[in-house]
Length: 106
Image 1 (cartoon, rainbow, N blue to C red):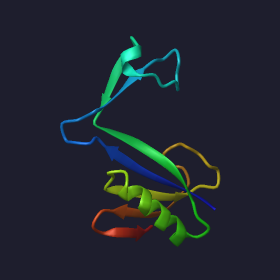
Image 2 (image 1 turned 45 degrees about the vertical axis):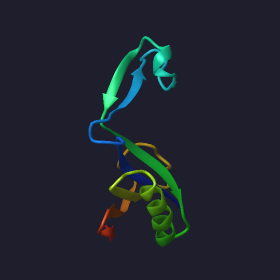
Image 3 (image 1 turned 180 degrees about the vertical axis):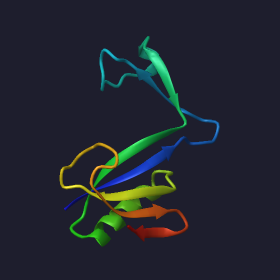
């Protein structure tokens, strides 16, 4: 079964931001900021949707929790999505995770 974890990655510190070039012509291309004249986009956090492989919900939760603890995220949502979509919110919400409270089944 395929699960997806959605979470938000905060910047390293409250006054920090992520910076990345916005290039409409070469969409999806990553280049160092110092090597582009493209407009720079600043963001205090980044949304993420990551595939989690697990045969059961408990296995998926265990793998997802490992990812959460290494990502600086404090909250996350676990979805079952057999379509393997990378779009946010697609699939069936299985559980949510909050730092300090753990998993809450949907």
